Length: 61
Image (cartoon, rainbow, N blue to C red; front, side, top):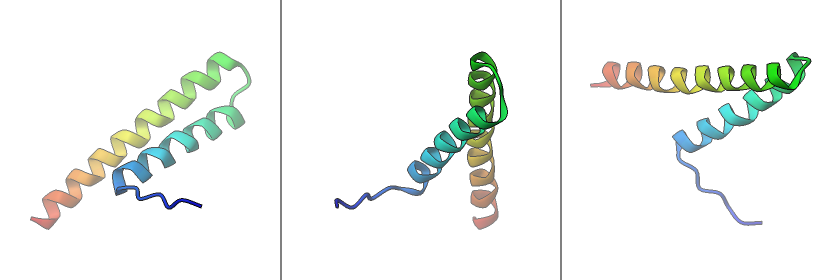
């Protein structure tokens, strides 16, 4: 099996993508609600990823 060499951002992006898909499918009833909620969750994950990244950058330097 080939190894996957992912950066931290790539791994977090894939986590956000797959988790958003699962949350959208499991928690909503209609396809429109699932898509909207999945996109909302994905956006929140990515915003948190960048926000926490900036906090860590500011705290480090």
